[in-house]
Length: 235
Image 1 (tube, rainbow, N blue to C red):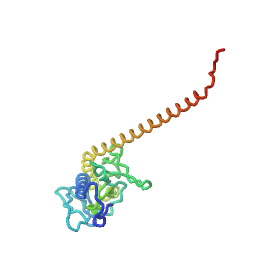
Image 2: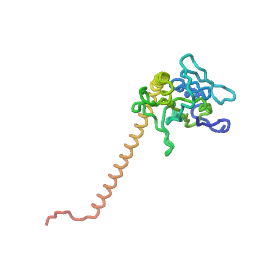
Image 3: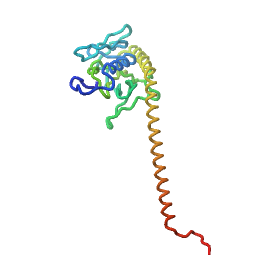
Image 4: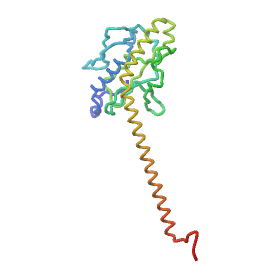
């Protein structure tokens, strides 16, 4: 989790309060992701995240009734996706994104054109969260990025085919809930970005047209000012 400790930077005031950011992240994580507890090898599908108050380091995780799995931590691999959140944008919420290390920018995940919910894929892209990465979640500021992990389904399939299939279907159902919840916000963000780019393009075209017309008038005035005879003359 990338963030900052407000105690070390009391002069910085977030656009959204820390409590609002914390609740947004918790809501998204609870709705769409499973969380791995680490050394205890438990993968919780249904859980609640709560504030720990006082000396906050990790949120309090409470397992809810329902299915949980015993999955060795060694089956978790660092994934290509992040849960990305820019609180400077009013009405925004955490979303899945790829990180471009060359440009230092995030590209929103394209839910509609990438096979996120293909439960029949050999190694489906179903990101999960490791409990240890939630350290610092309370101190989110500016752009926040939560590294996500991916289960090695191919290895799990070799160890326990029935477990692999059940887990795959469970994570697909939960991710579908997240997409259903997050997609309207993402589409609104993309539409806003497209509209802004279109207006900027139109403004550039208009400025170029005005400049060209001005240059044309200037050239015409220069020719007329020379007083040269026309191509045809009358005696």
